[in-house]
Length: 307
Image (cartoon, rainbow, N blue to C red; front, side, top):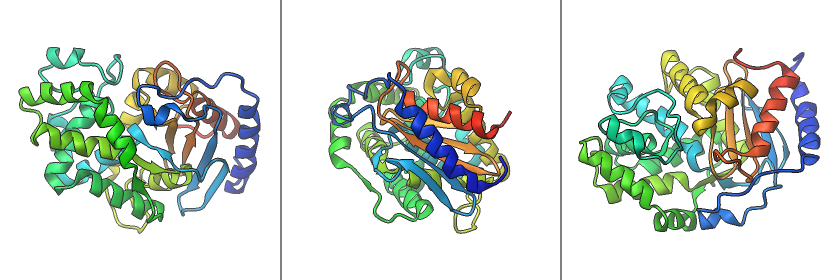
């Protein structure tokens, strides 16, 4: 890629190609507040290291971030307690659906990685212990890094998730039985559902992810993570960030990424830029059909990947 200024034509080209794509998947129908989303909506943003942002389509439309927030809570907890976290959650792909209970019993209540629901519950639990307000700490961080003080939690979505959150409750209670949850389960679930219900746009999330492309440096120049910790987060994103389709995502896209069932996907080009794409139609693994296709096209057109 000859110059960062060519990002805009690349995005325009990708949007035109995506517009011609017939199948876009289906929105997450098990969360009623998300089920009504139009699967043909599409937005994409690229943020450079200095905060310059390029976008196309619905790139400034807020959407439900869902599991994308797991990246930020992971980073925030690592900043507080460093490697102690890894005594409570693993770093291996699960090979099972993101809300599976199966492996927990075999592995004594230690989730495989921070991005399946069980692992994210552990991370949120530990961040809440460290800060006293896991969801608020996350929201403050996203506002600061994106420069958007209007970012907020959609309480209707949080309530919807809580009303349909029996499996997450089961995961939390099961891990609590193994001593791997420190806060009361109802408190943890409230923090977790509110965390997943943050609304942000592609522009917001591309900017907020920038610290991972800057090797741990926040937008204001302060350091959140060591270079090694930033590498760790990127590595776990690459191997575990798109549920049990992470191998396919690495094969097609070749970047650390994290998806959410709201239809968003973030991705990192270390040392160069960060991306976010949103389209609510999901595949069977819970990943945005158009989002993954757009990131595939981006790395193919630009040659930017970690490989």
